[in-house]
Image (cartoon, rainbow, N blue to C red; front, top):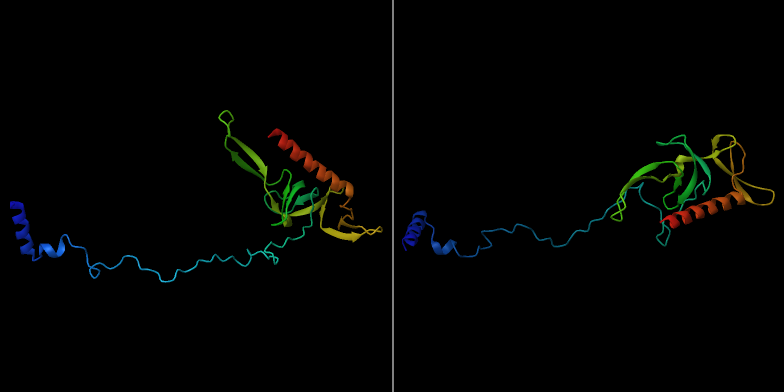
Length: 192
């Protein structure tokens, strides 16, 4: 009881009445809202830069560019970290015009262990490079060249090297490259 009397005397000395402040909810005039309410939410649009936009067909699929190289071609890297190296194309990625060349642009990948007994490992994988960074290469003449197109006497249209005149396209080379790719995929599937 004595404590209550002491509190009341302190309130009277401060000129604050006990029933006006303590135990009462705050009035909206005393406490302004901390967050303003938004009447219409703004939509966020991520705009692509002009050079990042891909031209699309009416069905919204990207336009695929025709590349100057095909699967199985021997190419020489003309720019980048592996400049001057020669390799064979093992994979083509058409939607972004990139190619995977054997033993070129190797990146290290850290693989976690899948089982308790199997240890994790660090492996080297071939990363894709843009097709504009490679040039067709002649193994016989040891020279890189641009590609040209011409029609043979039998009406068949083939690719050839501009510098050497060597014909690249032949049915045997194409079939050989496809068979080698199938063999490697089967071997990888068998080991997994």
